[in-house]
Image (cartoon, rainbow, N blue to C red; front, side):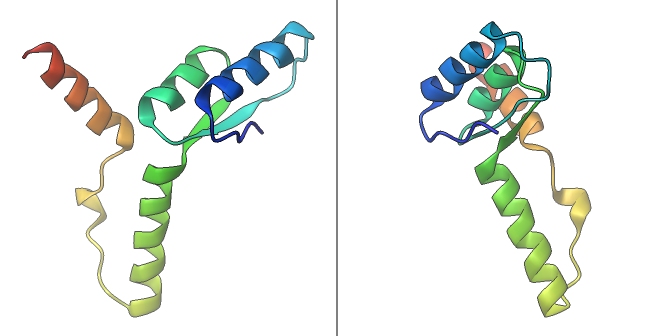
Length: 92
């Protein structure tokens, strides 16, 4: 698992691991959605956006511990937000 707080460090570590011929899974964490996507495109088996996932985990915890009814249909994946933001930026 690559968990550097610096994105370039994660990318360099991934390149080094790949250069050794390692065939096992390599996962990574990222702070931003575009970094998560870049890690996966570079060959990470899976990458995890800690901020978007932390929010979902917190909401789940609050719902379970308080007994509140959560409407999960309003929760969208961070990739959907990123894609909508990217499309909006391209149109402006």
